[in-house]
Image 1 (cartoon, rainbow, N blue to C red):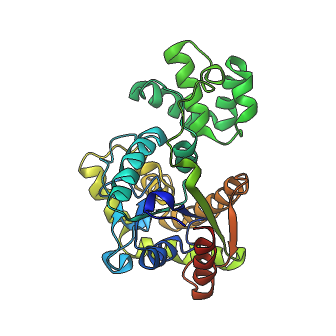
Image 2: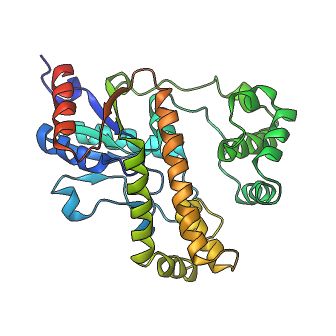
Amino acid sequence: MPTSSKDQPIIAVAGPTASGKTALGVFLGEELGGEVVNFDSVQIYRGIEIATAKPTAEERRGIPHHLIDYVDPNIDYTAADWAKDAEAKIREIESHKKRVILVGGTGFYLRTLCRPLFESPKTDPKLREKYRKLHAEHGPEYLHAMLAKFDPQAAENLPVRDHVRVIRALEVIEQTGQQISVLQPERPEPPDFAERISLVVLSPPRDILYEKINARTLEHFDAGLVDEVRRLLADGVRENGNALGAHAYRRVCEYLRGERSLENAIEKSQQDVRNYAKRQLTWFRKESKAVWFEGFGGDREVAAKVLKYVNNIA
């Protein structure tokens, strides 16, 4: 039988946005004597609040949460940065004999922790801006065609619309003179605890999930999202950085530039988040070891089933 937290599975609670991951993570933290480590790529940023669904103090119910609200919004924080911080935090939590509950929806972060990336050059802001402008002017197909010309193998492995990773592949070529497909196999070894990570994925009914997404997005606008973005811009947060590149924030920036009506910005944000939820589900379906649970994480029956599964694998 396991004798310490270092012998126990590390539970990763994942799923689409609005699926109740926070509620489930807190429940597991209470039942297992655990602490939550966030792997949501927007919740990491300080000051980016309303549309991020960061758990409130009431929602956390006294369970410590880590890697939330700690990165300056002008820093283009990467998956590799998160993996490094997460590894240190996991070791710290387990040294205190506490269980680790990873909670989030950014599958690339979690995959990077389990399968570390190659040592790539730091992001060059000017180079990033160059490719972002090309994306804005010509669309993702143009960038993907560029990558296909310089690194056919990388292009074959990346979806046409995954402009974030396509841009990164182009940057690496320009910075190093080498193809990312050649460099990627040169990965460091994963952390020793990686094999203990057990992935639990929530899969709520699609129609109800979309209703929740639409309602929550509207709530964000009613709660003052536009004013929040105005304040962030006035404080010097870059419009073209990762922080304000998140779904609703991006559309509010377009509204403030006069490119959309407020009504259209809300509708487009709702569509963006619904599409993001689809992509999240598609991503986690590719994780062969994922264990799926139908329903929302805040449902008592779903939470009980997950807890039973976790106790059985301990």
